Length: 342
Image (spheres, rainbow, N blue to C red):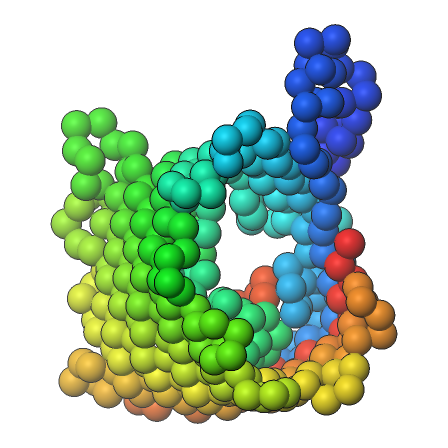
């Protein structure tokens, strides 16, 4: 049986060993790129039920990965593209995402300069992209990861996504994930959407309104999340904010607010955020996360990072400080590591 690494190497070498027809097709490809992230760091956790944890972890700031992406110009403003992205843990060499070969992303797309883009496969939800790109100063990584407290579905299997072109600063993103249950289209179904505005360069403002919902396997319950997020830059300072309303499959509702900022200083960048979770049930299981972090660029591709976050749980709330790949076990977390992007 071929190992995942052997399959990855075979894919990378395929254009060289391809048959003439396949070679001609590969030659027509406008671009094919192999890319990735190698990230490893020290993680210290405090306040967990099982005691303190000291670990060398992979993917603390950004999940370690290797990916393949390509794009072909079909003419007339139309192009085809694909992404195949494998997650891996460089501390152990094991595959990420439960051992899936391309568990991070796997999709094919058609794009038009005038009509937008449609893609199909395993891909990120609009809600997750809004949280990562607009709301969270930590870009859902390090100890300050907003997903420590603001739950969402990152990737959606069996999904089709349509993204409109940007017109006068506005664009929309709609995703439908097929439940693929015989006889019932609602079971395990996922629906996501967002509408966003990106201001001209003279006013560096980004705003997005997004919604995500998923039915359980029996279609008897549905989780829902709605978020308004904004990002605004003035000089070297970027401010972040979001408000969200969430309801899980047990109909437990919460309101979550995030405020944060990033400050560019020389070759480095400071990040800070505060997240407030307000439980809407009679249990009042509220929580708060405070986080601060710093990254220092050794080069265009390599940086050092450190971060600290602490969560205060009330009345039995059980949130943990995690990072880009680990959910965490404690209420306090410290990171120190290095990230290389290639």
